[in-house]
Length: 236
Image 1: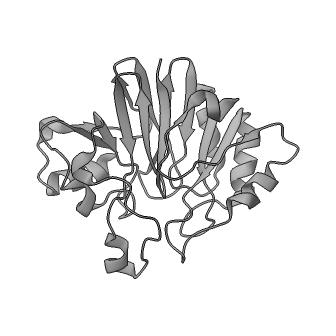
Image 2 (image 1 turned 120 degrees about the horizontal axis):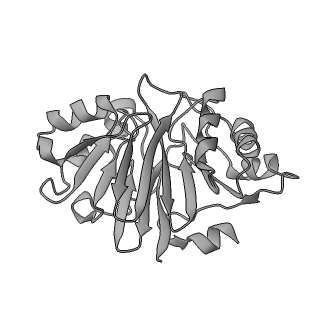
């Protein structure tokens, strides 16, 4: 089965799951610059109108995860939009038809052909979520934005093979040491950093995360921006 990922920058990913795909937290504009003065330092990897994923999941209602200037240019007639209740309300304000919306709160799940997608706890906003994707015998846990919290260990029930975790250490997110501690506690095979490199004001050195994993036996894998990688490359 074709199982690949591409990092869109920040917390954004596309999961290629055989003949279907899932997009999480696409930030494909420079909206944050207009609101907070933080200019993106990575190019926009794909135009919103060209997103072909079957489902877009937004993990919480913050601009770099649910971006009007991204979402409103996607195809409301062919895509499904999912996320926690706060995101659903935002989708409705963007005039996405209700029949294109699906709730994904903590504890909820979505079936996407042969893939199973789960919403998990994230310590960030009142209903923010992480996302677990299980496909072809491999499980990936994308933490989303989150401080370290023991409740994140609830994801152990899914037996994740790969952890993708924020490392920026500010604005309600874990730092590299906390992310490495989470990887160790979950017992994952591979740990990958994200949520860095988009804004000069809110970034971190992924090498610090790699160093924090030293001696754990966990493989460190660093995504290259806007390049699809296979699950085999991440795990082996």
